[in-house]
View 1 (spheres, rainbow, N blue to C red):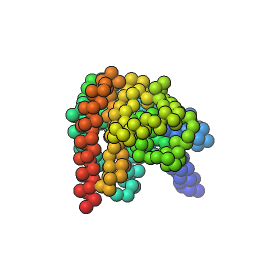
View 2: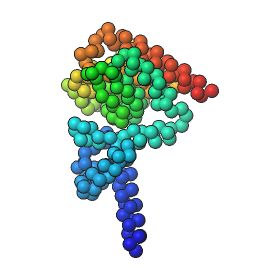
View 3: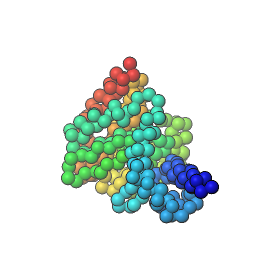
View 4: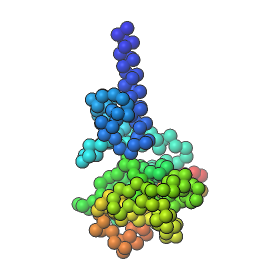
Length: 259
């Protein structure tokens, strides 16, 4: 009986851990208290689960806010389950070279409904730089990479993802209404790149370009993030040129791998 009871507790713990991981689908980040409320268990139980998941890389923790978000191990499993080519693996060497060239933090970004997920991130070498964002989830309309990917959608597709009402902002610079966002996305389609000037984080700006697969379908974006003071119009042009070359090289590798 004692063995059966121990197995029952183990199964319950595994179930709680899986439910906790699943909750990140609706909650980009979680505190211990929020996790306890979602699972209907004590904060101490959730804390133990999160500490274990953190040790295995299934979650990561923001040092400033102490909140948890999906970790690299969870992202690796998700990417491994995708059919076809692992864009993260194909992109990595090109992202590393791009980081060296532009000396800023470079991110690989995919769209997940109204959100974006940073599935890889390489910090730039400057002393003052944007930290790695791997595992971070943000509203797509507040980021350069998100706007680049949203620009691939039009009409009903975009409505299904975003709705047509008020959008949640992250800073005073965020776009919070559909009409303004639609106008900005039209500019992204014309220009072939997207920008975000302090729309997701005060003091942080970014530029993004699309990555296409072997069939020409946009599947991800390269985002280059920098302190806002370093990203003027001249710098945007330089980064766009370098990022486009990296994106084209990734597409070429994906094409070669699919043959």
